[in-house]
Amino acid sequence: MSRTLPPPSSLKPFPLHFTISFLLPILSLLSQHACPAASNLFIYAGCSQEKYQPSSVFEANRNTLLSSLATSTSQASYNTFSVGNDTSASSESAVYGLYQCRGDLKLPECSKCMESAISQIILLCPYTLGASLQLDGCFLRYEHADFFGKLDTGLRYKKCSKSVSGDVEFFRRRDDMLADLEGAIGFRVSTSGMVEGFGQCLGDVGPADCSACLSDAVAKLKSLCGSAEAADVFLGQCYARYWASGYYDISSDSSNEDGVGKTVAIMWGVLAGVAVVVVLLSVLPKGTW
Image (tube, rainbow, N blue to C red):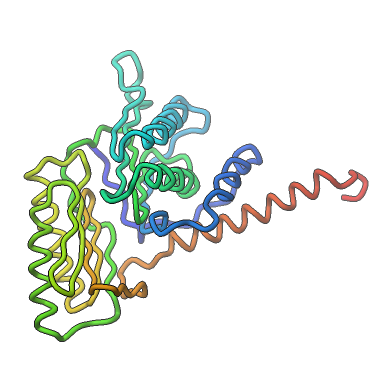
């Protein structure tokens, strides 16, 4: 059975026990994404409690999987891969993964988003048997059990703008637009007067399950965010978002504080500082330290 990843609020800071060989690739990736585009902005992440042993077969298979996902983004905005799941291999070493980019992203943008997602998921979820990460423009998940095509409508993240509307016309337009999103198969952008929005299902979700997932997402938008002028709801296999035309309040009243995003920024800052120290020590004469 597929494991359900814990919600973002259950994530805890990770100890910084990185070796220099692990540190340098991370810093290299950081330098490429120091000023991320909007599609690379962090939304949420989840890490399984189960761990694998360093230098294990699972780790090698996971690295192969992530490399395959990264390579695939130059040709497709969605794909699935599995490694180590043949009958001759131990089931404990198998790993399954998928990625998907937002439907309006071009492939070069998709590739950049996934590069950022891979670097962040390695940093946030070291030695975990399962992990998922959602950026604004792309999603990444891997597990050691096959989860493909299994409907998951659990709430992962919500954001409701602090600005609210009392305009009856706004709500009529919003509900019309959201009703249109419920009929999406895959990715759909919709507009109704002053309200805009879009929704998307993962590529492993069939039409009926996609419709059910988006209907659930729309219901949660209305119930959890009420009269907010902008709102986002991300479920396990789909999401729906809306906002007043030309305006989106990035401040939020969310039950999921962006603690993981802050953790990423802090950890990257610490890693960069450690790297500077390492470089300085390497060039100073040994007698001086």
